[in-house]
Length: 143
Image 1: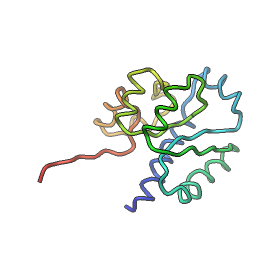
Image 2: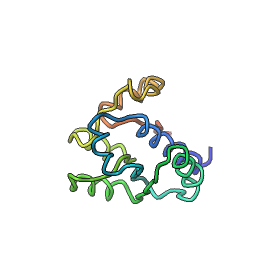
Image 3: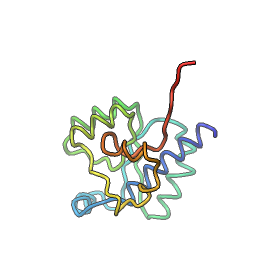
Image 4: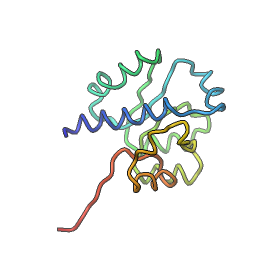
């Protein structure tokens, strides 16, 4: 699969997880950002992701999407240091995601609100508690 398709699929999964999740406290905080979704992600294939994922999602949900890009460490540090961050969805490296989960920076994923979590492979399900919902899995070996 081409890398832009993988990036598009990963962002689609991230946006859809955010759109499907939410609690009463989310509703209260999203009142400030009514009709707006702030997505913080990697700067990969932005034009393709905008065309294939963000624009259709925006239209279907009558939502304006603000797309914040950069490397994982920069964006994570910005989130860590801003208790009033308005980021709705953030895509991070596994290390940054694990730190964020350990520090309690993210809302816990609720399978009743995101039923597709049940369709993840066991290794991905195990990762949810320690580093959030994975959208890819890698294996590295020594040849």
